[in-house]
Amino acid sequence: MKTALTRLATAGAIALVFLTSVSACMDTGNFIEPIDDVDTGPTSAASAADTDCGLVICPEGPRPGGGGSTFVANNVGLTIEQCQAGTDSDGDGLTDACELTVARAFAPWMRVHPSDDITRDEYYAVTPSTGNRILVFYAFGYHRDHGRVCSHAICTAHNGDSEFVIVEVAAQSDPTWYMTEVFLSAHLGEGWGADHSDRFDATELDSYRGAPIVWVAKNKHANYKSKAACEGGGLGWGIAEHCGSNELAFFRVYADGNLGQSENDNPGAGLRMLTNCVGSRSRPNLPRTECYWIAGRRFYGWQSRREDNGSGAYYDKLAQFGFHRTRAPRLAVSWP
Image 1 (cartoon, rainbow, N blue to C red):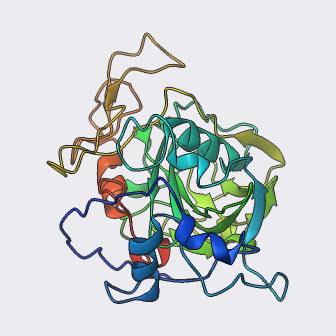
Image 2: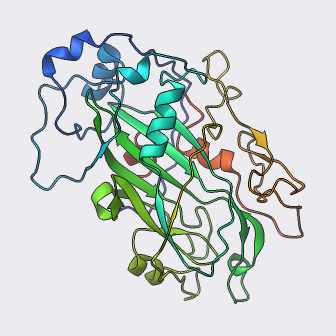
Image 3: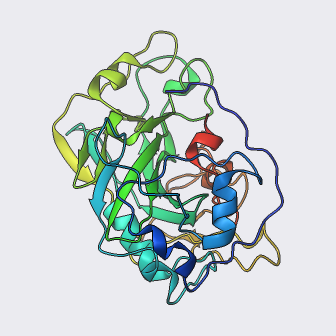
């Protein structure tokens, strides 16, 4: 577990070309488990394999199962080869059907307090990463942060709550894929000791059907790996969060909820945003639109801008983890 944020190094956009054939990899057979590599630069084995085999890496041999694996299996029903053949609207090398299938397969389950207001409009983004990894960004899009009873700014209620979860997936030449790591936002970027955002191995969280279960703090909607982690954290100044519920909610993945990737940041890279400024599905009479691909655009949960400052821009969070590029770094690189 890591607690310090390392800013992503600025890098030019690099076009990632996916091969229509992975014949160079076929002599290795289907993977038994994902190779636990971290891309450390252009000379790493993972980078060399990416050049040779597109998204699917060419390991020397499959990793044996068992032995304290930190991966969680999930029968996605697709092979990575199938994910590379078909309509690819955002131009990142993964087909639209694949992105929707993967987003649905690994969508988080949330343990929420029964009296909490979790009215929300969910969107997602999918991007290839290094090695054989794919990252899925789940933007919860809560309409309202109801605050806590205290006198400090972090506790006050406000419109909009831009919490999120990122799931890192190991794609396979086999229908069984693997959840490898998960990033949970918990007041990301807030000061006063309130930021408890962190990255976890997949097995550090409870899971259901191969997808993570996260605990959502009442009113403030921060994400935690467990009830104990939630109630052991806090909003600063010794003010605790509260979870403590068996209510289970599900992140809804809509066919028209794919954000795509950002063409504005990558001119000439062929990327296309699929969703930017949209109204609310769940409450269509709300006055505002919310824009996901505008830097610094505060999130107000589709409600009127009040005296408060709303919540952090989703664009800034997508960009922090590389979703605005042709290929994002591994979570272990973005959040060491």
